[in-house]
Image (cartoon, rainbow, N blue to C red; front, side, top):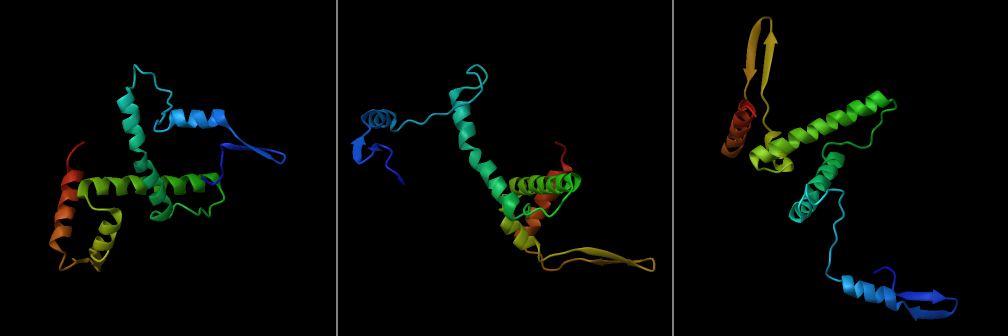
Length: 154
């Protein structure tokens, strides 16, 4: 602990806060969850389960700040800031959906797929397709999973 909360100081005299120490001993090992949900609408198991899922939200905020470059925002007008945050939120939703479909982390998917690009170029009415060669089998499987998941209705 950074400070000793059980010791009080009055002038030059130091003393032990017996009541606070007794309360801390009584509560040792207990964890409390405070919610505005009624016991009829949410059981204790539901509240505890929801609390244990908070790491997903924390992970999403870390990702949105780092991977999706949500900050810093160099916009001055409210519409520009709202648009920027909307795009970041949409990118986060897409990234989480890809992670759920593929089972790969965002970092692994981005670093693996970044090397392979496909392009279609039209010049004077001619169409040239530049398909990537040598796509690894695991990436091909992941891309097939993504294609199947996006083609299926929700």
